[in-house]
Image (cartoon, rainbow, N blue to C red; front, side, top):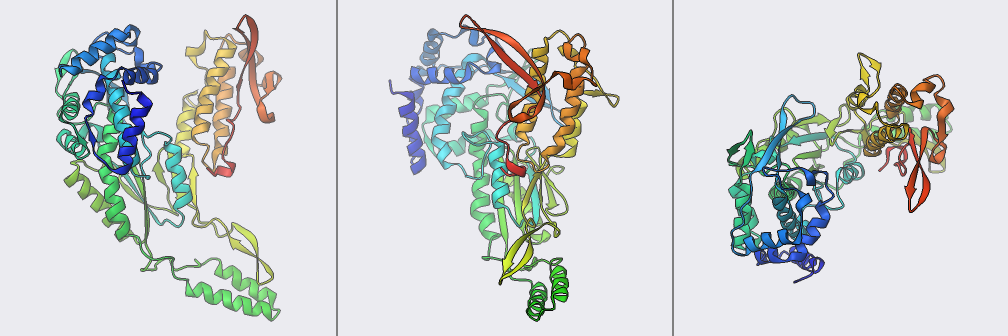
Length: 515
């Protein structure tokens, strides 16, 4: 049997060279692939969650792998219907359907996902960041931060019910362009048609990939890569031209007069003209010979940054809607697909607000022709910030009727466990928003969580009270004050102290909101 790493590297190289993938199905007989897949998913929280049967990872064995391989060898493997549940959607009264596959199906899906990911990963667009190795929300946001300076309009795109609406035949057709193996494609088709159980009733799946399925994200990326290629090969070349904008003649005239007066020693008049010029753009914002279009996508959410007039931004939005409808049989969400002015408003992307700075008063010193002057230093730069409604939403979890309250589900926990759980929640939020330039506003959330912490009944933290909170504060790393508790842990026959503290910021934060 071929080693897992060797085989995946081999097909990765074929994908990089654009060669088709052949005889894939017989690789599903390789037991080493299943052992590698098991090592990746057995720790997942959902491994013990049953699907439409009672089978979970708890009954895993080599015999089970042999049973799956034997069924595949004779093309008798039957996908089980998923067990459908519904989870709450953020900022909506609607619920999102979630499919729970059986354990055997999860294991086989992971093997297929490893193969597809190794082959397609080098072919995917560099502007796609969702469900890809070594990529994520922060890499997408960094791409915007470092490359989108001077953007005038944001086009926020959201594909309506993307995962539920993917066309099965279109997906199989897209796979068949690169994968020349009918048995493997048939196995994927049978997975898509497996159906789901809801209230003990079987329902067919006529479209979409099962949300909750391990293989679903890579299948969605394979199909949506068509959208990425359309934007990169059609829209970006069409709406990108010119090396740089033309200079603004009014600004240039004022600065020239200012320099002439400065040479004549009339400093006050020269400074007045310079300040007048700095209320004007140094380049022509309406230059028709200059356009820039930039693009980034995370799963079914994408954002475009356009430097040009709004009328052309509307054209881009319409062309995207037409392409999705005609080529991929998908629809843009009318309520979530917006055109936002970059300097006066903010676009929402991956939980952040994205805006373009415009602050003529923010100036940094420089020396021009031997004279010390100041120049505008932030205009046109990208700003990432924490939305205020997110701060309120996070804080409201610890309040009731406008007052901070304790968490009843923590009543019977120890001080150590309570503080550790609060810190994990706080650390998760601050880690995610570490790219924001206004991260300091999270101190309100920290204060609310600390007050909630002191109100948990039956704990020493609660007994101290809010006024004397500083009496139990320890010093966390970096000297930052934090509510702290220590518990003894037994490890290798010895007692070891484990420290739990609330209020510590995560390490390695970006400086002043810079990624």
